[in-house]
Image (tube, rainbow, N blue to C red):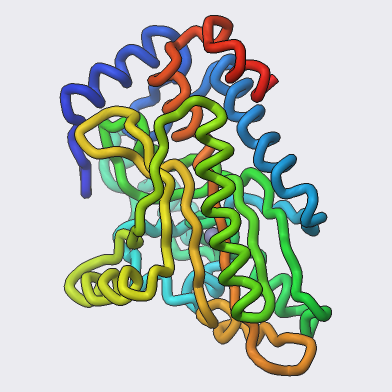
Length: 308
Ligand code: ZN
């Protein structure tokens, strides 16, 4: 399997524990799981905590499906930075004989890509991506900019792994801030610190790390170095299944990247900056199960009260 990352013994044991307890429902493909009601209850409660924390900012709510126009993925340069993670959607493009041939091959589980053509869609790799063109289409921002609550959206990263915390499809609880550079930068910093408190209140042993995106290849290493140097990305990390701590939330300052791609302007006509934050709902849920046990009814009272 392309790019498959094998699990460490600790990760494999935790995954087996989750599946045995029915928290995750395994499929044929690593990193794609169904989830039990108990899992959903936790993830939903975590999402609601983020909603409550954002409420004083009265963000505008938006919700998008987990697919993105291919044109947008191309415009933001995703295929330069993360060609290895993208999921493109193809569809049948042929006649009756082609369909018969495709079916025959597929029935034997042989490759059947010959009569498939690219569609206009890709799987959404980050929940904030649909927000930027939507805001740009409105024209210049109102004074003070805008905060958008992009909800809990399914996103896709093609990185099959035996680590239960590295799913190929998972929910990002995302909020986006667009406005003046200094406003956006300080919003990112405020949320970064707020997230440490919020996740700490669930009695998770979190810490804050300067981070980089998983850029591809040699030019990617330079992008990562510059991202780190400018402190553009922070992650809240926690131990889920070793050896390394796992990022459960990220806080990203994009400077003018998305604004310049889409032409998002401030009220005075100058270029806006953007930042986003994403809480990984599955990872936070897994961290809670790992830390407090698989039976949520036996979790510490203070954690239960915070969630429910
Ligand atoms: Zn984002």
